[in-house]
Amino acid sequence: MGRKKEGVVEGFRVLTLTYRLSELQREQPEAVEQLVELFRRYRAVAAMHYWSLRLGLQEGVEQSLERAREELPSYWRKVFDSKSPLYAFNEIEKMKRPRKHVLKLPLIEALQLKRSPNEKQKLGAVLDVETSTIMIYLGNRQRLDLSIPERALRWLREKELEVAPLKPSKTVRIQWRPEKAQALKVQIVLRVERPQPPRPDPREALPCFVDINSSYGIAAIFASFDGQRVKVYETLKLRPPNRGRRLREAARRQRAAAHGSKPNVNYALARLSMRFDAKGWVKQAAAEIFRKAFAYAKGRSILMNFDIPDSEAVKNSHLQRTLLSVRRVAENLANWYGVYVEFRCFPSRRCPLCGGELKELKTTRTRVEKCEKCEFYDDHDYVPFYHYLKALGLPLPQWPLRGIRGLPDQSPGA
Ligand SMILES: [Zn+2]
Image 1 (cartoon, rainbow, N blue to C red):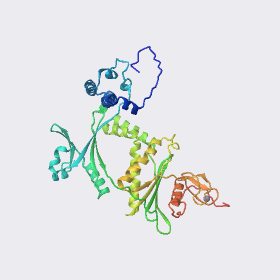
Image 2: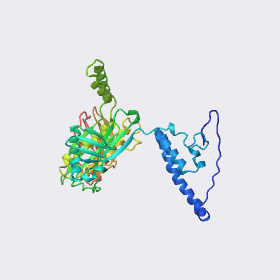
Image 3: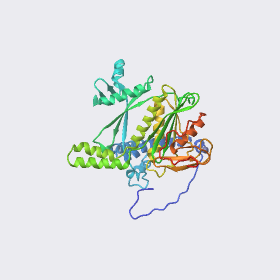
Image 4: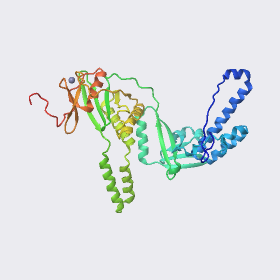
């Protein structure tokens, strides 16, 4: 449909005809070949035109029209004419633009450079550790030098050690956001490729069970089998920072800034505390779980399971998107470290001992599940862990995993 006119409505009906291409090819081979060629050229030109309009790149719009004049017959070019009823790019300028543009370059360390001086011309970016600089080659013998803080270099070294003897490849991503052009965002991306790790034997490995719970956050349990029984090393609960406390802290910082004490710092901190970085929190939490798993494993393999509720179950939770991002973060860390990870879900309302239904007891601090048929009870968040151990063919540990305070007395006759 062409350009919309003010005060005009347009109705349309469509007749569809279909032809067998093989028949047309047999009858008019040259015409079909020309049609295919025309489409090939048209698509390349139209794609450039589309994205130039979408990104608001006047230069690209002009280039695509020039290419169209060179490569397409005039009547095929009507689609580029905004005054023609055939105009095909009506709504694009109103569409949402991609917010950032990323340029990726290979990053090579200066040390490697000395070994192969001939490669110099092909480089996009060089990391010179001695001068703490990233040098970005811009063409035309121009170079942009960016200094890197000592802390960042240490981080790079640590990450490289984590995957040794594998060598991560390095890339620089330079982000450009037209509406935020006052800052240049440069990222160094380390990537490591390794074969998919085999599933370790649960009797030899360190099973690590992670429960993602819509009501508060993340619980992780680290355990291992010593040949007779399952030993639980730690039950770890991670909660996102409390919203109320965060906002109070932000208000305090704003007051301090208004009264002139270190205004820049305090305004920045106020913004930080107001805008809770949920993704950052998930990344930190997942990294802590992996770090602890490695510490308890002491060289053994790690067998990890993340029990993540499906999106339906956490739909109305304010943590929804955060919690669902756990899977991607966990997968990435597992691939980075070469840890075997699964994402199976286990019940939290069924008794792991007798299969009976669990009933929630109200205590002052913890949600406790108690079996209707047998004596089993434990923290709601730990119940799936017992089912996980059963699925691994391991014996169950003593319950409850941790002492529970404020539990109503369960002994008969009390
Ligand atoms: Zn039971």
